[in-house]
Structures are given as structure tokens and as C-alpha cells.
Amino acid sequence: MTRFSISRRNGHEFFNLFDEAGANILRASELLDQLLGSWPDGTGLGREILLCEQEGDRITHDVIQLLNRKLAAPIDRQDLYALASALDDIVDYTEEAADFLALYHIEAPMEQAQQLSEVLRDACRSLSGALSELHGFDDLHHHLVEIHRLENDGDRIMREALASLFQNGIDPMVVIRWKDIFERIEQAIDACETVAHILEGIVVKQG
Amino acid sequence: MPATAPAAVRLAVVDSDSGFVRVLAKRLGAVGWRAQLLPTPPPVEELQVMRLHAIVIDTALLGSEAWTYIEHLCGQAAAPVVVICTGPSSVAQRVRGLRLGADDWVTKPCHPEEVLARVEAAVRRRRAGELSSQPIEPIVGGELEIRPDMFEAFVGGRAVGLTRREFELLHLLAAAPGRVVPRERVYERVWGYAMAHGDRSVDVFVRKLRKKLEAASPGWVYLHTHFGVGYRFDPQEAEEKETEEVDR
Image (spheres, each protein chain N blue to C red):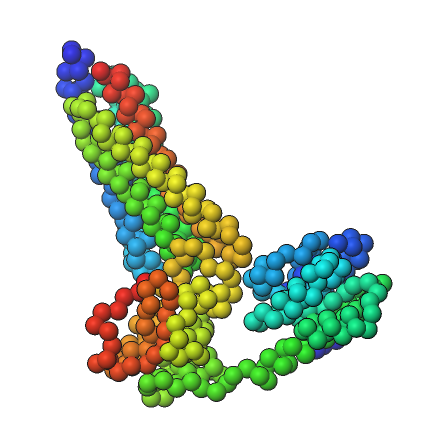
């Protein structure tokens, strides 16, 4: 209980930064979802996702700076570092997927990419909720269970998406382009699950 | 190679005779043709989506299915040139092969240079035939005049401003007025490959095309959606159009 109180009192700067990171991953994933829903129109959304990626870098930098500055941290320093890093990965992969749409001159979206981006958006929504409740070390269990469920959904959609690309007679260029994009969105979803694992560890240690 | 020789021919060689194939592949590489070397005959549908100009095939690999396979291969829409290159055969066999649609027959042993020259000649003949038989008659529907000779559509003499792909899509649909063309069929004909499940390319291009047609000819509706199936070209005056039409 003592440790709990100290953590809360000294950690508001960290928790504020993770709140910001949660909002940032949610915004990036919502933008990717909108981009895939409107592609090839709405290309301006790509620029906004890039800004989220830069914001993610700024938040990660601030967390590391804060860790270097503070003698006491509210959570295990390794966990804080891992959490910041995994959150940054989510935005990085999201931005890469958006970037590939333009880079590969994608003519039209694939339904499976839209489904994957919906899963990513929902996972980010749950993560954002979990991160905003982190400061009180509340029960994050329901958020984390939802993220694991969504990650399983993502795996299933990914398998179906790959199977559709490797049917006979598909343009090899379509296969190359979309395999890359599917993989980036899946990596972003996997990074969400990594964050969920780290949060689970933090909650257990604080319990 | 003569000046009239076809350039950049996409060729498949279906033959398990490695010695012959090796020498032929060397010659093909030297003239800059892209060749797929297939030691076993793939399904005809697979060959079709390779968008080949020509196939050299040893019918001995096909066994008892040889005639069915050749007939199926030659009967495909936009079938490639088919040159049968096989061991000694009877006159009746050669006549049958050619009557089923093969473009030429070469008997082994033969010189790769001769095979190459025969493929070249058959592709040249095919291309000359295609040019002279290509429909250049305009298709007229509503206010729209579709001109295949110019890869463009016009409304009152003004160009709609179509891209190559938009034109091909419109021409394909307009060539079958009133009939629903399935989405997969559209993709296969316009893009030249099988459509991956979930690919929205056809829908996106129909949307772009509709936008341009609506701007050029606001009083008419030309393209109609059949949900879950495909699209139909059927010019109707705007009053008659469906109240709400969305892609897919």
C-alpha cells in the first residue's frame, strides 16, 4: 500500500505521457482505418498519420528523458522503457502501412486490409483505455482480455488474407504489395499485444 | 532476327526434354524473349493468366489427355499462339492438332532456331490478324459515344477524359449492353489476372468512371450495380435511374 501511494504521487509525469501515447496510437489507428476506407481518395490522411508517428517519437523521447532525470520511478524502469518502446512500435508500423499505400501506387483497397485496420483501431482503443487507467493501477484485466481477443482475430484475418493472395493466377505485383501492407498492420496489432503483456506484468508487480 | 520480328514475346515452353529446353532457353534469352520453362503441363487456366503470347508444347507429356488439353487451350478467349513440338507423329495426328486450333506443328528432332522462327511467324500472323479484326466501330449509348480507335469516350463531341484502364472497363461493359458482367470477369479482362478475393479495384474504377460520366453527361445513368455480382452497362435517362446507387 505504501509503495502504491508513493508511485501515484511521484509518477504523474509518466502517467501523463502514457495517456498522451494512448491517445496518439488511437488517433493513428483511426486515421489508418479512415485512409483504407476511402483509398485512393483521402490521401491527406497519410500526412496526418506521419504527424502521429513524429508525436510518438517525441513521447518516447520524453519518457526516456524523464527516466534519466528521475531517481525514483512509479513503475519498474525496465517496464517503463519497454512500454514506451512498444507503444512507439504501434505508431511506426501504422505509419509504414499508410506509407506503403502511396509508395506502392495501390489502386484500390483490399477488404482484408480494411478488416485488419478495424482490429488495430479497436485494439488501440482498448489500450488507450488501459493506459488512462494505469495511474490508479486499476483493474485493467477487461482491456487486456479484449486486446488478446482482437489479436487472435487479426491472426485469423491475416491468414485468410494471405490465402487469398496465393490463389492461382493472381498478379505477382499485387501479392508483393499487399503482403507487405498486411504484414505491417499485423505487426502493429502484435505490438498492441506486446503492450498488453507489459501492462499485465506491471499490474502483477504492483499488486 | 528480321526487322519485322515480334519483340518481347512472352513464351511458355512445356517440355521435359532438358537438353532441348536448355538450348532453346539460351536462344530465347539471346533474342530478349521472356520464357517460362515448364517441365510438366499446368492447368490451362494457369497458362491463361500468364498472359502469354505463345506456347511451345510437347504433347507427349499430356498422354491420353493430349487432344482435350489442346482443344481447351486453343478454345480460350485470347488464347496464345500454340506451337506443338513433339516426336514423330502420323499425318492424322498433325492434322487433328492443327484443326483443334494449334498454330503450327514441329517434329522433333528439330533445331531450336527453327522452333523460334515458327513461333515468331505465328505471333506475327496473329498480331496482324488482331490489328485488322479489332473492333473500331464506335459504341453509342445515351449521349455517350465510345471510340475504341481513340481509347476515349465522347459526349457531344467532347472527350470525357478517360484513362486507359477506365476506357477498357467502359468498353468491356458497353460491348455487352444490358448484361451483367461479374466483377471477377471484369478484373480478368481489364487487369489480365485473376482477381484476389477482397480486391476492390473494380469497384474503385467503376466509381471513378461513374464520376466522369456523370460530370460529362449529367442527364444519363450508364453503369448499374448488381450487388455481390458485378456491373451492367445500360444507358437510362436520369429520371429513370435508381434513387440510390452505391458501389458493391
